[in-house]
Image: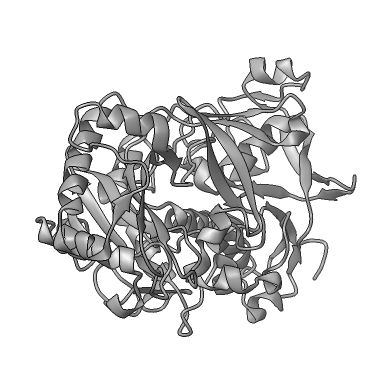
Length: 493
């Protein structure tokens, strides 16, 4: 390779960064350096690869960053993966896209190229769907192998949830990525290989063949502390070792919490907040001021005996409707897969619309990591949760729930008018779907360039102007695929 190649640094080898680096390195005229703070994916142990052990990450037993997130009732935990593959290595594998109206809303707000008709092509191209095969909404040639859990793989609590919800009137859905079938009760699509092992974005995209490319360098265990900025142009990054790496362009894919943290440490963010930390303001932008997340009550239950099944925590899912398709309910175990019991599981009720008014700010010592405040639930949250709780109360009376012996760990009269307020106070959890901390239209343009800067983009969940109505993992893949395509087109222009 020669020095005439355009050098692009990708900061963060997580869900988005692994995809972006792999795709950009397809262009032999580009030199790509991928920097990841955690270990390479050859360090994955059985707890990462086994879908049934995904809750171990949430319980602090896997290599993740677990930070408290301030909420109205106190601190709630949230996670991000700290290894190659990022959160795709520690999440529930749920491969949902969100709804067409989510992305059409982006386009209607002026973000050209991000409407449903455009992004669905990317979703299709990214997958090899082993259940539905080629169709108007599914593909068979992508790097991500996708299928749905089978009944014989599902845990006892998930089966009781699915069967019990069917008993009390839920509508069966064959494909929960098909908007025309919703609302209803279906099974999560997940990314797994033929051996029922997790497939992360690094395993899917950074294959041995891709790693062999002469224009791609992957550096793990490498922390980026700041950007090198000359005037309004970003010219590289500085590592925690003090080493500087120069580049023609930097793309930050460190996740919705750490991407804004890096930008603010480098002088790109709200001027008043940066001044409070004696950081020179290079670009006064609302970085970190509009964080979204899916949050809601996690009602804890217990049943006697083992958990059962070999599937991961994301199994059966009810996408409900009180105001459109706006709530999802699912049960996931927090007991080890081989535990003899009793088994605890959480019946999570997440609101799919966010106020977008959470925040990510610098700590007193900016190098300590971000200070995160969760978005408040919308004004009508109690009304919507009351609708959801009535369905769960009906489920508790189903034959399937009774046969399993499900019983609440902290009893709550779900039909009571004050039940939603009590649940919000005691049981709120995060889905781990943090987005919108560097959104298009405020911090970024429609090509994900940082407004007013040169040589700097963001290509992870931070860029989303609003949160999609579903798990955000696949949305991050879509974003990285599309930004890589845009950047390679610019290179050829």
